[in-house]
Image (cartoon, rainbow, N blue to C red; front, side):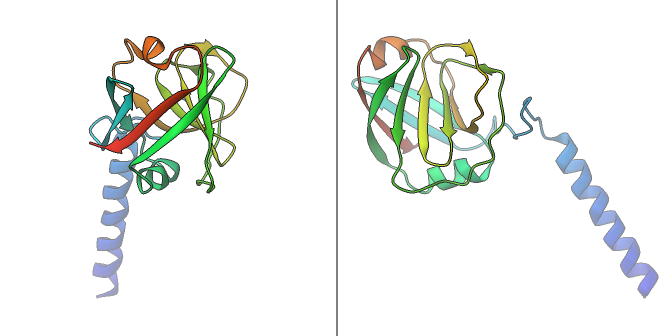
Length: 151
């Protein structure tokens, strides 16, 4: 019986290992979730779809939706909002920020990027806008009101 129990436990471990290694990961080790939950991002009359990453920060943010935020312009490439509650952070340097990235800076600053550029800062991934065409125009040059909701 002990042999049978150890064999079934070792086979479970192998199944779990295959599942873990078959997921795609980006360069900061966080799992992308291409077939996972989607979010609707509304800016004025423009509507975008974003895909959540599979991590604790994305799950915690998702649990707070729907939410409408008045995001502040910064550096001509991002809008940010300081959340009243910290989210779980697992920051790493992505190397390149992409247009449409929704990232967490620290544990409570939500950042929506509308230009692609290299960075030396570390962030926790939350989601990415699937097709960011028109995002720059929708966000404009000043502060922007952005609604995030589950799709």
